[in-house]
Image 1 (tube, rainbow, N blue to C red):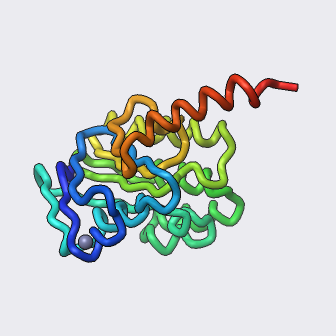
Image 2 (image 1 turned 120 degrees about the horizontal axis):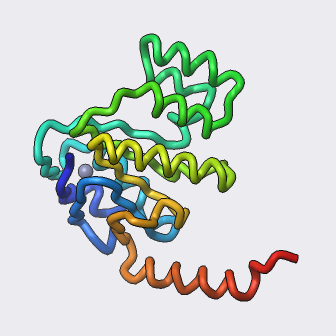
Length: 186
Ligand SMILES: [Zn+2]
């Protein structure tokens, strides 16, 4: 698993408030407003050879974003028999179902690091909860999971990494206000 990363010069330009991040085992959550660099940080973890990573052993990264979870494109990223099954099923599936198929067909190994960019996009609450359960199962299997998300369903019981200082406190304050004033069933 990855334990920390120091961003290279190129990536530092996109993440203004911080350039060094620590990760724990289990579920890590990257939060911040739009434009704060969440996707940039995920891509840096996945691919950048200039950013300085520390890992506690051999680490295998699996990166998912809206593109890789597109039901009509997922097969490009998953070869062999699982890829064929996903491709066939994807013709009749939503993004959430495709993600479920990918997670189910993948045999997670301890040391794997799953990186997901806003997995809640395009899903209703029920699916978001299912995806969260899938991530919890990965963690139980010994994988590390790093997610960028706006959904508090993913934030719960995770190691929170703020890209803007005070964002979690701010978000909690906002939710409390909107729930008490605007979110009554009518
Ligand atoms: Zn970099």
